[in-house]
Image: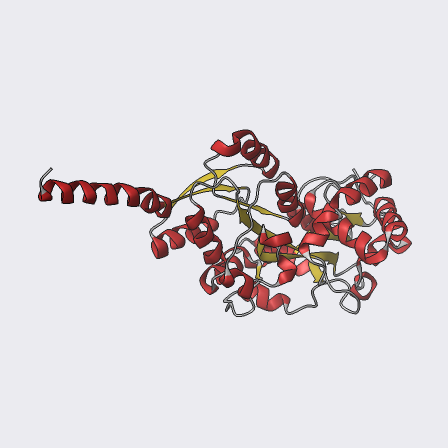
Length: 342
C-alpha cells in the first residue's frame, strides 16, 4: 500500500470513529408527560442553542414508565420528564434513571429539589393553595391545610379525586409533617366537608367556588394564575369572586411539588441528555417555566416577567425534600383510601 492510500485509510477510520460521537450530540429522544403547549418553545430554544434536535414522545406518566421498562436496553429514550415528585420516584424505583454528574446542576438546583444520588431533578415548582369565595368565607378561617378539615367547613369544600397525584403528594406531606394519626383524621375531615363528590380538575374546583357549588377548594396555584391572565369576561368574573391563600405561612410553609426529569440509564445519547438537563437549569429555561406556564423556577437567579406571579406575591415554602415527599406517597394513597376520599 502506498503512502497516499495509507493516509486515506487512516483518515477514513478516524472519521468513522468520530461518527458515533457526532451522532450522539445531534439528537435527543425525550419522553414527556408534561402536557403544556408552551414547552414547545422551550425545546426549540434548546435546539437553537445547541444544535441538538429533539424527538419527543408524549403520553401519560404511567404509560411512559411502562413503555421504557418494556423497551429495556433497546429503549431509544434519553430523558424522561414529568410532573410531580411521586412520578419521578416511581420511575426511579423502577430502575429507569442513571445518576447525572453535573456541577452546573448541583450548583444551581437546590438539594430540596433533587432525588437520591442526583438521579432526577426538579426544574420548576407549583404550590398547592386554598381557593375561597370572598363573599362567603373569611380568609382568616382558611389559613392552614388543617382548616380544610374543620367542622366549620362541613358541606363547603370542593376538591378533585383523592387518588390524583396532586392530592396524593399533599397527603404525603401531611403525613410527614403531622404524623399518621393526625393525617388520617385530616383526610377523613376532608371527606366529611365535601360539598359534592370529587370530580374534574383544579380549574373546575375554582370555577365551582365562584359558581357557589362550594365555598372552598384546593388547587395548584397556576390554574388560578391562568384565569388571572385570561381575557375572557367569564374567567375575570371567577377571579373577582375567588381569593387565594398560601397555607401554613406561620408553620411549615405551603406544600409545593415539582416538574422534573432525569437521564435514563439506557440512554443512547447520554451527552445530549446531560446538556438538555443542564439547559433546563439555565436562567433562560428557568424564566420560561415561570413566564410560559406560571410555575416558579427552582433557580433563585432566574428573572421573571410574569404579572400573575407578581400579583400572587412571595410566600414561605415547605422545605420538605421532594425525594422524601415522594417516599411517603404509597402510604398517602392507603390513607386516602381508608378515609374514603374517592
